[in-house]
Amino acid sequence: MLELSRDQVFAHGTRVLSAADLGSKIRECRKAQGLTQEDVAGMIGCSPRLIGEMEHGRGSVGFERLVGYALLMGVDLVAFDRNGDLL
Image (tube, rainbow, N blue to C red; front, side, top):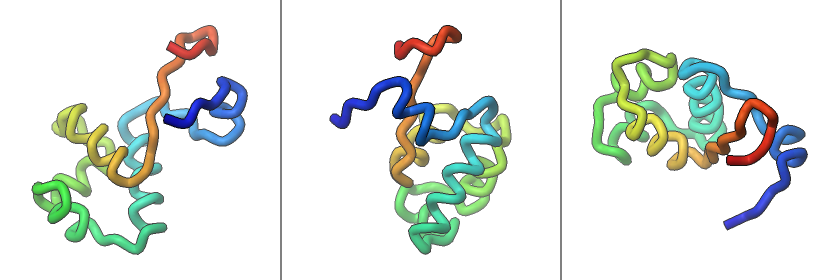
């Protein structure tokens, strides 16, 4: 596992404050890889509509499924407490 300092994460990462923020970042990564929503749906075994819901931050999508999609697209999630310390 690649170890990054808090400063490195802040310098290169995107702050996510909502499911829509995360979905937007995942969508960027999917498009950068040349994949369609249909391609990804086939990879993770769900409908293209659900992929769209995740990319738009809809509340009906389960957290586990959203995290799985993020990881598949190469988006790592890092948690910090409000003081900026890694958890």
